[in-house]
Amino acid sequence: MLKKDDLHVVKPIITVDEALEILEENRVTWFPVLDKGWKWVGLVSDYDLLALDW
Image (cartoon, rainbow, N blue to C red; front, side, top):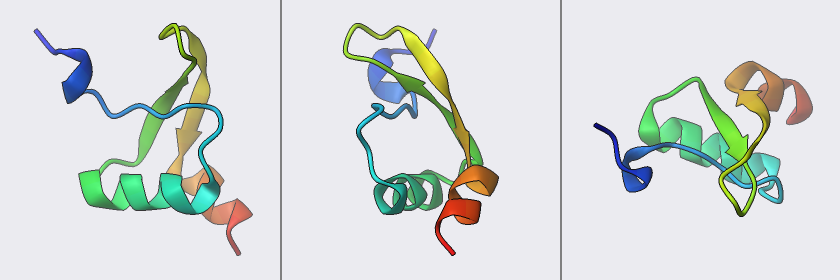
């Protein structure tokens, strides 16, 4: 079973550059966006972020 520390998630206040860095460091192509209470806010992918970061 996974623990919260093992999951790759981000908060809604993260910047595009920070999110891209996390994706690259963890070699993932997407991750969920969760609020302070660990409730689902959305999903962000490398495609979404790269489209914004041009």
